[in-house]
Length: 411
Ligand SMILES: NC(=O)c1ccc[n+]([C@@H]2O[C@H](COP(=O)([O-])OP(=O)(O)OC[C@H]3O[C@@H](n4cnc5c(N)ncnc54)[C@H](OP(=O)(O)O)[C@@H]3O)[C@@H](O)[C@H]2O)c1
Image (tube, rainbow, N blue to C red):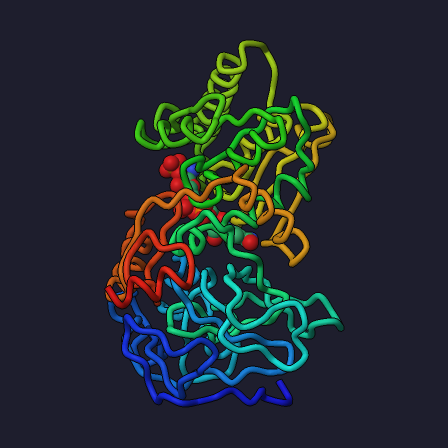
C-alpha cells in the first residue's frame, strides 16, 4: 500500500440508503465497528460508527457494498476469542464481514482487469504479498476492512463477476461457504461421477453447497441433518437421501469415554452404516466423507468411508482433538485430506457454476442494515441455518443491478 490512489473525496458522509455519484468517494462512512473495550456477544460488540473510508493501494479496489454475508468469524472477532483479531491486523478497530456483493467505486492505478461500475462479488482470500507468495489472510477477519460498512477495501484478485441473475443479497450470501465446499470436494477429494458422498451438516452453510456440487459432479449425496425441515431442504437441493442424526445419538464421540460407551458408539456407527446401505439400495460404503464437525463425528467418518475412500475436513465445530481407530485407515488404505478456504483460481471456477445457474445460493434469512448485530447474535445462539445475508447499500431486497438500485432509491 505505497501509493494511495487519488480518489475524488467530495461529500463528507453519505446518508444510509443513498449512494454518492458513481466513482465519487466520500471521506467518511457508516460502519458496524468492533472495538476491544466492548468485546462480547454481537449485540454488545457491533456498534454503529462513522469512520474514514479506506485509502486504497495500487492493486486494491474500493467496493460500494450492496449486501454482506454473515459468517461465524464476525462473532469470533466481536468476542475477541479465540484470538484478539485486532492484534493480528494492528488497528484499534475492526469492521467484520468476509462476504459481499457490490459495485467497484475506485480502483488502484495498477488494476487492469476491473473498472469503476463493475458489479462484483468477493472472495475472502487476501494475499499477504500478492505476486510474491501465496501466504493468505482472511479479508474481513484478519484484515480490518470488511463488508459491514458502506465501503470495503479488497485486493483486485478478490473480485469475481456478480452472477447477473442474482439479487445483491443472494450474491452476498454464498462466497465463503461455497468456495470452501468447492475446494474440499472438487480440488481436494476430487469427487467423480458415480461416487457416493456422506455430508455432515447437510443443511448447514457448507452442506447446502456440498450437496449441489455432488449433483454437478455426478455423485450422489447423503445428507446428515437434525430435523425434518432440514431434511426437506437437503432433498430440495438434490440429496439422494438424508439421515437424521438424532436417530443415532450414541454415534457421537464424547471423551472421556468408558469401554461401555465405546461399545455403544461402535454399535451406533454400524447401524448408521446400515442406514447408508438402505439409502443406496446395496451393501456399499460412501467413497467420500465431507467433514467439518470434528471430534464428535470423526471416528465414525473414518470408519464409514469405503476402502480407498477419502475423508476431507476443513473445520472442527465440536472440538479439534480428533481420535479414531487408525487400523480402519491403514488396513483399508483410506486418506484424510485437509482443506482450507480456496484461492482466486478455484473461487473463479466455483463462481462460474453459479453464473451458469448450476449451483444456486441458499439464502435462508435476510436482515436489514440495522439488524446486522442481531444477525450475528442469532448465529452465535445457533438459531440460523443455510446461509444468511444483510442489506447494506441496497435499499430493499430483490434488486440486481446498479441502475435499478439507483431507481429504487428515487422511488
Ligand atoms: N477452513 C475453512 O476454510 C472453513 C470455511 C468455512 C467453514 N469452516 C468451518 O466449518 C464448520 C461448519 O461451517 P458451516 O458454515 O457449515 O456451519 P453451520 O452452518 O453452523 O453448519 C454446521 C452444521 O454441522 C452440524 N452439526 C453441528 N454439531 C454437530 C454434531 N455434534 N454432530 C453432527 N453434526 C453436527 C449441524 O447440522 P445438523 O444439526 O442439522 O446436523 C450444523 O448445521 C465450522 O466449524 C466452520 O468454522 C471452515
